[in-house]
Amino acid sequence: MLGGKDAGGLNVYVRELARQLDACGVEVDIFTRRIDEETPEVVELSDRVRVISIAAGPPIPLPKDDLFSVLPEFATEAALYSLRAGVRYDAVHSHYWLSGWAAHLLKRYWNAPTVHTFHTLARLKNVVAGDAGQESPIRVQIENRLLEVVDNIIASNPDERAEMVWRMGADNARICVIPPGIDLDRFHPHNAVAARERLGLPDNPLVLFVGRIDLMKGIETLLDGFCHLRFQPWDDLPPKLVFVGGTIDRQDGEITLGDDLQSVATRAEQLGIREDIIFRGSEPQEILPDYYAAATVCAVPSRYESFGLVAVEAMACGLPVVASRAGGLKFTVEEEVSGLLVPVGDAHALANALDRVIRDRDLRASLQVGARQAAIRFSWQTIGPAMLNLYERLAEGERENLCCLGEIYAS
Image (tube, helix red, strand yellow):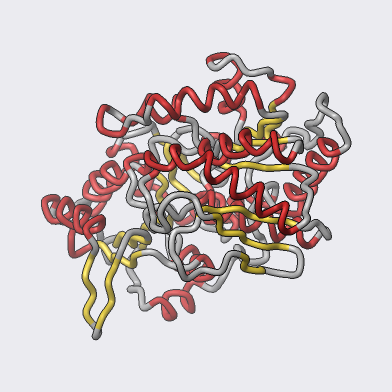
């Protein structure tokens, strides 16, 4: 489920993109590494979309840093599968640096044009990660190499493209800025009272956080900021923090926090706000619209985001967002229109912005309207055709002037 250790926006992106291509009549094969012995080799998600599990390394989950060594085996087995299945691919779209290198290795077998989305860049993460969260040198090297060998790169925001061109030496002509899409049929305004009843949430003002337990998500800033917010004078009910993400074990009516959430709870205990946090663990995506409807404001205090899917999903549901001025968030969240932006890592600024949205009803009402309007431009009805157009032109042999979407971020 979303919010787990390695389940986030990238997973949603790949699944929803496949659905959009399916709706356009395109056949899609999604290759992934086998992590157990029970999953069938081929799982059909629809008549035109299949997930293919490739045996490479032991059939168990492996740490990300250990996956690079199994990529040659993955590429060989994927090529053998395509031979057995008698399938030829017109275009290959890889996601994340590991899959990008696998696609590069597969090009000798498939001879298909390649397009790559990094989703996050090691260089940008390392700037804000500190010593404990640095990405490996091999990842940095491979990301630089991919800029040279793939046919087209998709950047999620203008800053990401600028980083690739000016600091990593990429060819600007081969980079398209196409943000991820969101499903506006799923993410739209709901009744807040009904949503709170379904979720069993209180009547307090609710600050919502949705995300993995990851250094990049700014959880320490979130807790410090919420502490400042909570201990302000409140005439009515004080705010609560609804925390969606992490591991929770539910057995025999008992709820036990996993090790990842326990560390968050321990820090909250030290700050004196443990009783003001409602931990919900990882939730399936179909439940998220209820959380967005129930909340008063969504906090996205990330140190780095290439796009900020949670922020855009929240906005699509008419929920104001308070986010860090980091990466793609400063392009997706419009200041004083769909939300408020604060400096990265500034807990006091985060608290003050959350306080404004909660207390100022006129501001909140204005942001609710602006949020939905700002999110509409990221609809899959816009993004999907742009992606399909790129694939078709690559398959036809074009390699120049491929970026026809226009300025999504400026519209």
